[in-house]
Image (cartoon, rainbow, N blue to C red; front, side, top):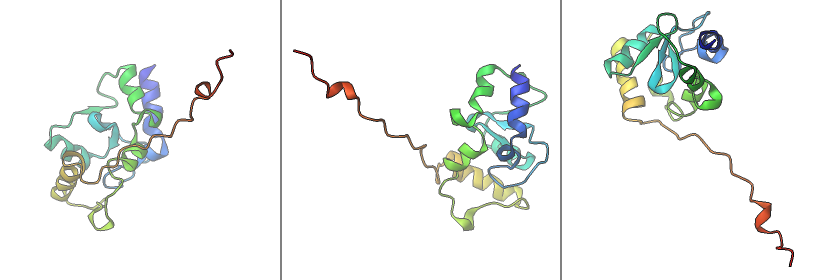
Length: 139
């Protein structure tokens, strides 16, 4: 069951484009960077591994329900969530392209995920004030 949900997430349009370099894969990527809950291309997978970021393969690894759930956008995972947080403030001149050299990709991964240079925390929706605090006590 977890594997079926994982493959569905893998094929989601936003997860078929590597969040780091923008390379697209028609069927979706098989490499997942567990620490950042992203589906990544092989070049970016290698760059993450250079910093000991755990990578799991969609087809060759066993997946728990919790690991798959962590990849859902609603839980802060997936490539759209990474673009909105880890890559939120990447200036245009620092962005990678699909043809970027592996050394440039490693440097980008270091700056982005290790140094958190462009990180922007997820925004929380403000909570509505509780109506019970303004209610009378009935005396």
